[in-house]
Amino acid sequence: MSKVKSYWPVCLVIFSYILLLICYLQDIISGHLFIGTLFLELIAVSIWLSVQGYRKRVSRKSLLAVGVLWFIIGYEQPVVNFSTHTFNVKTYNKPKEIVEGSNLYMMIENTVGVPLLENEGHVRNIFVQESNSVVNIYPIDNKDRYRSKNIALQDAFGLHETAFETMYRKAKEYFGEEELHVQSFFERDDIDGDSVGLVLGLSELFARNEMQNTISIGVTGTLEGNGDVRGIEGVKEKVQIATQSSLHYLIVPRENFEEAEAENQSLQLKLQIFAVGTIDEAKQVIQELNQP
Image 1: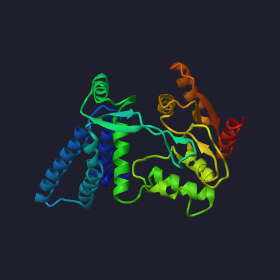
Image 2: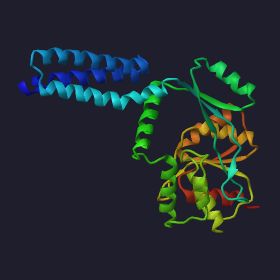
Image 3: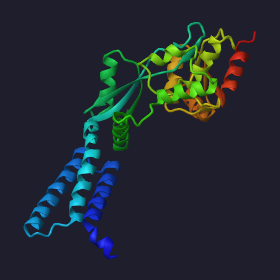
Image 4: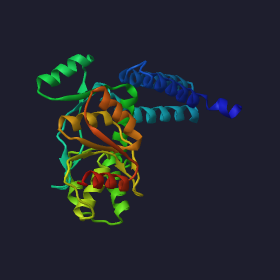
């Protein structure tokens, strides 16, 4: 008990940090207030240490508390850079083939971060006036900002594998080769995320002449190294984009089927949606659609 008591300055710093972090993540306080309060705490502790130093009573535990506080501030300070982000706007992006002539289309929407504006209607009007087709608008909360901050820090120190890099690794794992026929696709810098993993795998099969397709089909879903297809985020946007692009067929992960079909029916669309759990099932769907 006496050991814990001797570390009370450090415990106090950690407790106050956790309390502030919870308040921030619950949108009770802003990022500026979060960091500002930590700085005020640092100033208060520094003044207290100065007084203790004058009395020649500064302990190593007190210095440790200051060190911990400096570390926390250094780690959390970048969150301020994301404080102005208020909305993510998903806009229409014309589906594209990875392999020309495959008729297998990536379903990708543009994502635009909007700063400072608080009114969703105002945001939508701005994009409509600029002739952008808005698919959906998502408000950003502090959990989103904190997640973005952590990813940015990991990227800065080379600790984070992007979703695009993960997709590349899993595709090579599935096909068991270093070089793929669709290798040039991974040189693109206009795609973020791994939702094109399945269409990438199917396009590779098409490029190898292991399957044929003459029907325009939208495809979305991640591809695991063992050939499984996993769910994605934003399947509602994929449904809307497929319809806006006059596609009649859309292949989605089984995990997303109910949400995709609900969006299809709620908007009274005439899109045929197929649920798959593996790349082999997706290949089978394509083969059946191509039968006369």
